[in-house]
Length: 323
Image 1 (tube, rainbow, N blue to C red):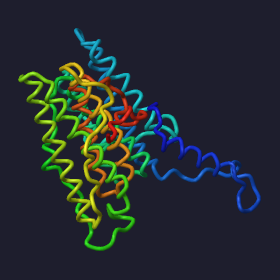
Image 2 (cartoon, rainbow, N blue to C red):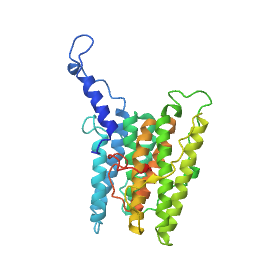
Image 3 (cartoon, one colour):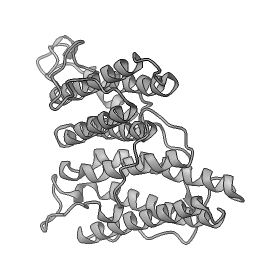
Image 4 (spheres, rainbow, N blue to C red):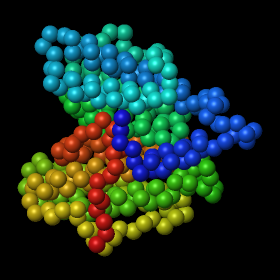
């Protein structure tokens, strides 16, 4: 199970207080039948898709010459995904996964394709899930994308400059428009400001080799995402948060190893920002934040950040703060 964020602890506290109350008719609320879980259909579909993926891992692990050292850790993470998705639904429940393969993948490449299909099925349900489950689905979809690259598939990262950005309503913000998520959007913009600054430091300490080329590419990606959030906030009638005059780095950056460590730190921090943004945005716009979460997850892994079964869900690392 993924470590909960601070807001998850707050939510759990509220649940504890609510369930401890007595019903309006004087009965103990704990004795009443629980209300149906509106997320149950989404959870059942996600569990069924994950079961298909687990079966595929088992089939491939059972073939002669299977790359056990590669496959076993990925399967273990997939089992963790299933456990998290299955919370609150009866054991053994599930529904057939639409489009599930009739034969198990026989190669790592075929398994990577199934990982991506599983990610897409989770993302397709983002709008049908309540915010906490949507956040979990986006995190697991990012992990699926990371599994696919680990299995040898090329990264499927779109240019963030072409990533669809929410089109706000011309009317005042409402419960179904991005205007209700203004604080979270401002936080995402602030994090991108810090990332742009940080990548300037990263590039200055890398040799003129493929690493520096990657740093330039990712620097441009964060500039594009920063500009996209600025345009959206402006369209919503809000002044975008400006960049700080300078930022205090979390540790000294003096050479290539510490520069790559900073890049990994920046991307890991952003996974937390974007996982939270998935939950904060209204349903039509969640996919944009989930795409950003996936891209940051893949970039963090590129720079050597430790992988996690639930990208963006552990407590955030120390942040880059304005100086």
